[in-house]
Amino acid sequence: MDGSAADDLSGPTLPHSDTSSDSGDDLHLIYPDPQFAERSAAAGALRRLAHAFVRHRTDPETLAEITAWADATAERLEAASDPVPRPQDYFARRYVDPRPSDGSEVMAFGDRAFSGPANPTAMEVDMRRHGEGVRATVSFGAAFESAPGRVHGGAVCAVVDDVLGYLMVCLGIAAYTARLEIDYRGGVPIDEPVIYDARETRRDGRKSHVELAVRAGNAPPDAPPLIEAAGLFVIVTADQLGS
Image (cartoon, rainbow, N blue to C red; front, side, top):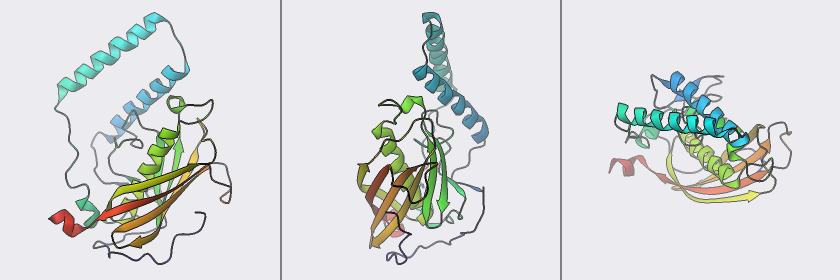
């Protein structure tokens, strides 16, 4: 899993253009949100609250205030508008949109599960196309702690699947997770950045075989990974989406 991306990935030819370039800090946001900055700031404050709530203790009066505020705010939000559904063309756009440029931050929805900055239940994630793969820098706060100082394995796995999903975006294919195998070789630390690196190793028709490794943020590139994963994604072709 430590080698470079496979040179020869056989499979369906991508029907859209590749706009790969060294674009630095560009954001490839598939579904823009006019309130992206405001919603991300609010979600960030709620994430801070969640981690503080888990890590600290307070008096009953403060807990009652938090309960009343949270319930009232939720009721206000629920009454303000109908729920916003996810767009139905999420997969179809893989075959008409340009691929994210190399080095760009990649994001589907601002409030995407596990990685969206506008989702208060997400982790702190910076997801970028890295050559023909994906590299994500992830920090897990106190709300995801299990064993002392270590991230819960389920939270680690959730981000593994999310990073591999974004690998499909960067490859320009629509695909579902069919199989995911994870080897937990070391504990993932709380409150410290870790690096997720994912790549496609080969393609057999509609089968995309992938690998992923997780290392501490300050570890050298050849350091043994904390987590290794291998998976199989099944591609849904543009023709199948059309039918």
